[in-house]
Length: 304
Image (cartoon, rainbow, N blue to C red; front, side, top):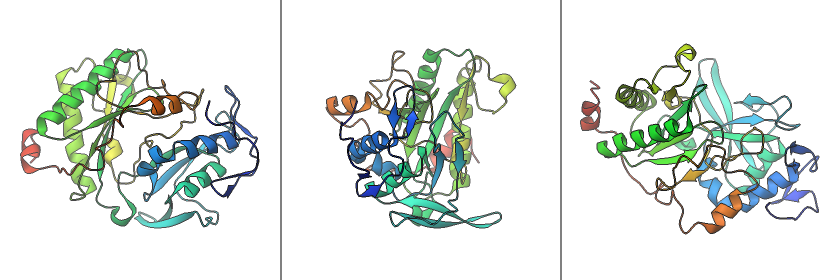
């Protein structure tokens, strides 16, 4: 696994209560080991989780016991975190944000096993800087169909002139992620992503659907564009999941995507080895790309 530094109760200067509490019983992974894992991969995960409103999946006693989603933290925030007030229907909600490794380790201290950031940064929460398509397979769906769906989405986005990236979710499917310049609002991004999802579904309606109907999901893949709604989130690149065997949502190069690399292929146990062997970051240009949804793109998809 990752480092063997198991003495002490602080990681990155953050004190851990119950550091030997087991969070992933399948491997015996403790809170301290999870903190050390994140410390080791900090340079990889931090760009995707800092300075964003976060929704958290907390499992204080491990992934098998009483996990819960939390948007707003009620308890007092430590100095390693900050609150972001965001206007909601019932008034302002205070979301948590982190700025560095100490903040990330503080999430571990809170028993966070999944980090779900907004697709927007804290200073402009109304202008998303990414668009996410979640290829979510229903029951009895072959993995090869998920891979084909991601490649189909990749080709359609490329044709429109939008560079895009792929990652495992650590769950059942794949995410295709499009970086955006912060020029458009949530409604426009959601409308565009809905049209894109419908475009993929039309290409092979026996395999893909763009509606949330569970009755139609068996043997098919839901091209989920709803994650591009204001306030919706998707799991961060390099975040662990609250699932058996501690899987990690892992960015891939398009040339790596295959029927043999399943969504839970990478985990706490083997991710560090993968990162150490990589010749280059498969998402190395993600934060450098400047692209927007244009009028011609909308016209191409039939959006008025």
